[in-house]
Length: 523
Image (cartoon, rainbow, N blue to C red; front, side, top):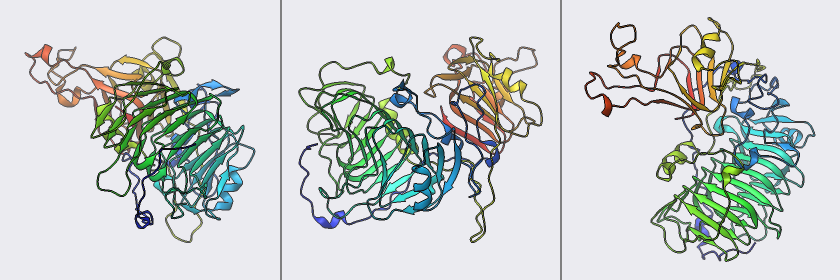
């Protein structure tokens, strides 16, 4: 793929090895034995991770999640992308172990528990279908190489890893095709919450008609040819790129060639002034690409959006701050909502959201034996009970509180309350004698499942016993330990203007009075 020529630079600045700390949302550690999701409702896919290997780790609960965007679409005989969650969970610490499980025929959730340096430098491990490769917290790192997904490989998830440092000292390297993640003719692939940087060639290459791909919540930095899509004359690729942080990358951010449907939204492209890397361009629609670009934030980028005369590129809601050069659009594209549900965040919020949330996240449920030289203990997971809530009566419970009420007092294992999309106008209380409860929205966006109410401090109680007070006004009140909320919105929509005469306008959305509370993807 020909590109805009790179600027000439002094070689010295490319020899540097900047240490980039993975930034993630601070997460509480939760009990390792309470994190596997059950399968009775099908909410979390056709299966759950089995017992972990004796290596001492249990995969994070979200290692068994399914993809969003185009990777979630049922096509080519594949029902979305859920990786290896039907298989065993194994932990790897060496290149030999990683290759053994990544290249196996059967499904695996492969937990990378430490830094693995690939040899020879530039090695790309050939991943087979039905695999999840996930880092254990921020410790999972692949150094000096990456992964290759060949023709027909499908249903692969790569999450929570740092993949770095195959750079060979030549900025516009034509000799070393050392990518972090390369796919040639693969389909249904989800690349999520990784830190990708300083490679000899691309950080991500989606080539040769690879399709049904989602790239989300990654940090891509310190690289020249960052993210290429397409590379054939066929107009075949369907791809979603959202909530990624492109920082100090020169070109291909991404460059999209002959993509049938390219949906880019809520990405943050940042070119920091005074640094050694200068952007040549940002998003590029090449050939006969059809691209929708929305609610992204471009900071200081040269030529932030460019298109070929033959491409279609529809822009809406983007923010451009300190940018210069070409900013183009034209033609008609497609409606992404015809393929999958999504709700973009406001462009103005994107820098804060992406800085806080992109890249590897702190591990959940890692049962690591910290004593050097000892044999780690066996980690196992117990299947959780799943209670499903749906307003329309298609599940056993119509309200979230009804499902909470069904959790037995003194509960000793994880209970997942799977809440289907909708707005649930109710108050919810998880009492102290019902620990290990997860309330999880099952939509593709945290905005699709909303629990809301409008009590305020001065709102009279129905029984005439006074007012709620500030703490009593909460829409969701949690008093039980080891509570989790995921992928939903908790709100208090008290209308202060309409109740000026009320004494006490404080209004709480979520109140917690418990230990080990974990909020993941919650508004």
